Length: 324
Image 1 (cartoon, rainbow, N blue to C red):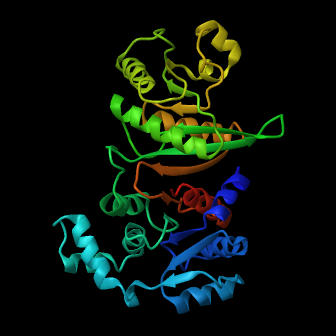
Image 2 (tube, one colour):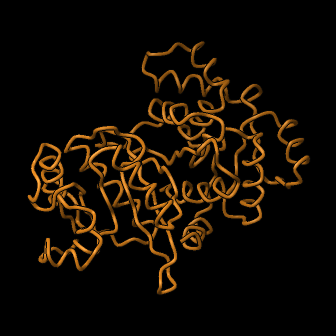
Image 3 (cartoon, rainbow, N blue to C red):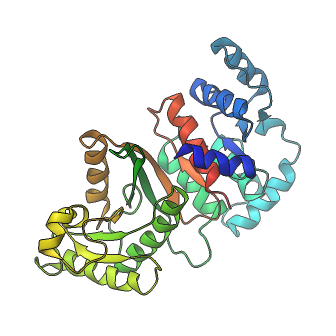
């Protein structure tokens, strides 16, 4: 999977902002990225401090761009642009104060076209990564929400990786029918980048009316709406076993082109989604990559504060490959 993404980046080299430029995990990942020559890290922070940390842990970050908000020569233009983006909600002085923080400064580099993508969260919370993105980069035209998906990967018996997409597992707590359609649409486009030929299942505790309830109706209606929007196979509402087991599908929904072979899953709420992807990760032997934020005008993603350098490296490649 990563071989394909790296090929994309070699054909179209990108610049990615790391909001925590002095973090040892970020620096280790940056050194690996620089050795591949397909992605340029932009490290936010004091150059002397960053170089000292890099030397201390023994990683060469020559070639990385280091920007200190305190000495940034284009700060006045950045403040002016941020005031425009905030549309009167913040004064110039308030914007200048916020831009001292790596998360806001890094996001503005993306908003101004100085970088293609951003990866944060090694020390910031998810909210501190998502909030500047919503305020400054904003959602794509026609999108009403930002959502997320996880890409799950494990080796298969054929020798090729099995790749699945699951959404929304991290952002929207109780999405509406229309929001579920938007989540499905964004997840389909994301899945394609990872080589998935999407077959979408809207998951439920019911399969085609076997159960009753508002949540069942929501997933059935959302699936019906999605069929009118998406150009890939869609079914729902559907139980997970019917979605992934051909034998179960023969009994529960024999005429479905998705049942038994679904690879892109839309959950009814964050509760189910978060539990579901973690079961697949911990008991199913899948590696989970994400949350990948969807619906923004530029790729901005969040790391776990417990991440390691390998996870930073992988998520940097994923994030940059999502750039148009």
